Image (tube, rainbow, N blue to C red; front, side, top):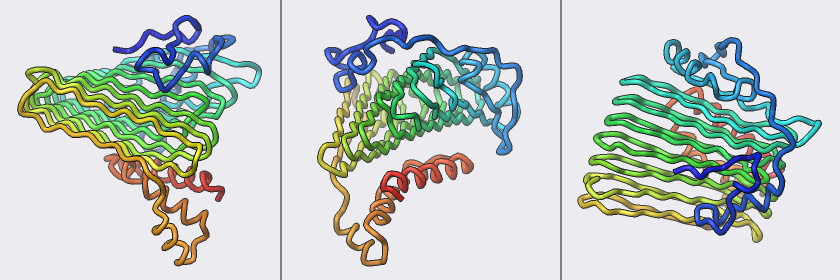
Length: 349
């Protein structure tokens, strides 16, 4: 269940007293509501990008026309690019709030690429709902490379159906406050869900990756891998919960979170959870938080790399497995290039 939240009403802001927001205190970060909402205009046309993506500008059109854009994409290349790169304005502290819905019918397939960068100061609260019918297949790739002054809450609800497939890959560099929530109602009966993510945080940035998966019926599969890096005084929060209801026999659910803390002063708050009320299930979760391998660092330096180059190489290698799993070749290369650029900047190269 998504918490009721209105970015323009401070009385609705959750606090640390609420368990779901224990490590991410929005009321402390966003003490006053944004000055004004961003102007929302109607999207007049849908364009095709060179790589075959249907282009959709979220900052101009909001999410009101999202289903139309998705239908257009599915009738053409099967790829949808949601561009959220132009939030913010140099003249004031702006806010944006919106919701959208994408429905995939029986057997339909769609690849969605969401690119959120933005500029200046802004606060954003968005909700997306994805509904998958029997046998539908959705691949969702999200890049969150927002400015360090941004306050960003992006939440989504995924409704699966028997034999459907949902695969999600989220990559974040954090912000002043950034939270990405995913809630999945898992239908079982051959439905397959993957929730994957990677974060690379520095300075005072904050990123909260919260996932909730509810298995309600038999023979459902969930696999989750999250890997992250934190340095300086950055904070990462991972809250993953898989709930297996009574009667959801045959569930196979696995969750892993792995993080590296690169210096004193950086923080990782991890809370992986399994709640199981069914029999004959295969469920496991793991959480590992450590430091960069000094022997590997030394080995790289003996091969002629500077310390900064060696650190960049090792940290990139740590998060790359998440990107390597993206099934769409174009998006896989896009994300790998993004990670290379981020890790080089991360180490001052």
